[in-house]
Each structure stands twice: as C-alpha cells, then as structure tokens.
Image (cartoon, rainbow, N blue to C red; front, side, top):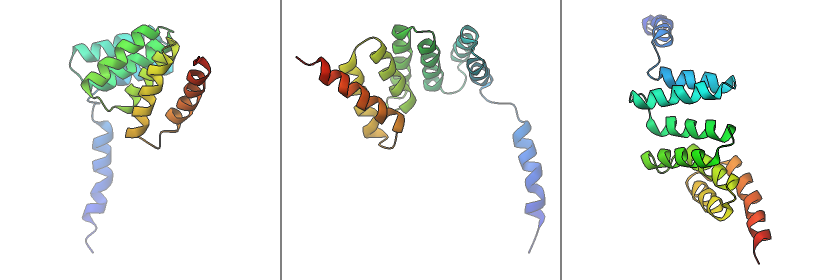
Length: 143
C-alpha cells in the first residue's frame, strides 16, 4: 500500500495548527474570561463584533456570560437576546437567557426558555437541572 498520504499527515496537521485563528478576538476574550479579566474580555468580544469577526451569535452569547459574572442580569439578557436574534436555536444563548431571567426573578420566562432549549437539545443536563430548580420555584410562588 502507498504510504505517502500517511507521511504527509503530520505536515498537514502542523500547517493547520500554525494557521492563525479566524477568530482572534473571541479567542482572546475567552482567555481573558477564563482569567477573570471580565472588562477586558467584554472589550475583546465587542471588538470582534465591531470587526464582523466570526459568529456574532457566539460573541453575543459570550458577552452574556461576562455580564452574568458581573451580576448584570439586564445586560446579560440583552446580550443573550442579541445572540438568539442572530441564531434563534443557539443552546448557549438560550441557557444564558434563562440564567439572566432567573436572576431578574422572571422565573416563568426562564422556565419557558429552558423548556424551549430542552425541546431543541433534550440531552442538555445543565438546562434540565435548571428547569427542575426553576419549576419548583414557580410552583412555590403560585397562589
């Protein structure tokens, strides 16, 4: 058998690994978010959006994550809504929307958002746990 394609594989992988990221601002934002440098992460995501870099739904959803960490649920909701405006079925954006709604004590809307998310992604364990928690809270709030 011809071994040439196998010999070239490492070179192809090297080329792919050394290629610049098509989303450097998102990557930078993710690194900064991981380091807890929230204002800088937000600025990186904003710069990615302004430059038209990458997937706007992902950048908006990442902005929502930053706002949630900053305990700014209203801004997180706006960012999550911007993400779902670009991609209505984006699971991370829907989950962050539900988190923001729960933080804003808008549990019925959070419940509805999580049900929608689970209809799209039934195996999402994090959403299932959140739905059980919010369902209990909504039930307890009922007159």
